[in-house]
Length: 356
Image (cartoon, rainbow, N blue to C red; front, side, top):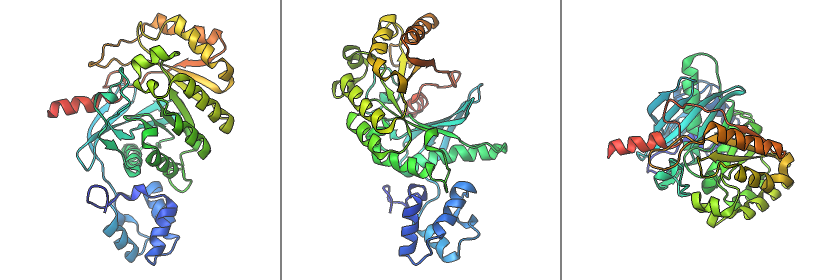
């Protein structure tokens, strides 16, 4: 039985785990590949569709697993093609997932927790405390639901990129997040390339080391948002546990171990962290890593419950120019879904308020 007293989702199993489970019950190992083909390539919505799987095996699957455990509650479509999905989990909790149309393909941002305990003062996700971690299957299912949506549109589109930076702190749900990555990356599954997957963290230092040691070839993004401890601690409580120098040490280890570029996420907050002086400090902080670091400057989507405002265009450009002049690779991120509840966690927060 699963966590909620009902059948667990089959999406939570790796192909090797499924093969082991089947052979323990007298089934042939190759059935796992057949089932995965139906799940991720043919995208079956019921076990009965799996026409080349024997009846005994199908009965086992029906008896022991569910094929869908999250339901679409609400969908918002923006003018630029961004789609925000609000899903209801089996225990009634709500989560968000976002589909974004990029120049390089279709990218999906997935959620890893119900709520968030990191408590960044500018973030909509942290307005509601963490209720629980998502199971790996619930993270996989977000991606499957988006792919079903694309399949139903009939244009032959597929999700090509995944970012793990929705509601919650992915490294605070490390094991389930890694299992999710292994399922979606597997060549017999959705086959989303490791280099097309990005995992974001607010800086849980021990997990950065652990992530580096896994050598997954998956991209790492670190949400820094300030270049000094005083400022970062004032907007991100986690900095009191893991200050910037500890994050830089962990990043050095990651860079040396993987030789993979790290993205630094930096939300620009008007008159808080968007001055030229902060840009200079950030350039100084990253100067010895500049060949393997890329700064993503993010225009802020205002959240009603916080006092923060978006930086002016002039301030953003001055910040960008300062980094560039100091040899730091950077970009001002293109915005998606500005005409819907764009900030992560906003849609969920609104729905919960209506319910109460």
